[in-house]
Length: 104
Image (cartoon, rainbow, N blue to C red; front, side, top):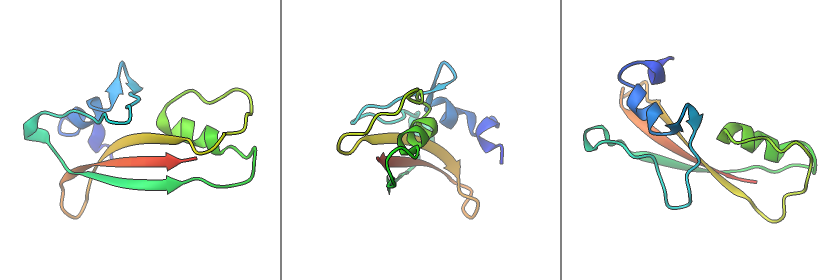
């Protein structure tokens, strides 16, 4: 706990933030790190499903650090939101970056 705020974890956190806000990455973008700090990226696709109007889109927006829509509107089709999150694996002590693709 607290690894991201430590001097060792701060460069990884800075790679996903811009002006202390979570950076929104486009389809082909990813966090940039210096070659000495390059780490593997682990990708997960998370399918968010449920009844209409229960807050699936608001949940994904909150996790992605984007503004939550103030009014309810139905999501047409599938909306994919990509979130990057650095973490340090306890067993190996090595950092990785998780790429979470939320399919809403």
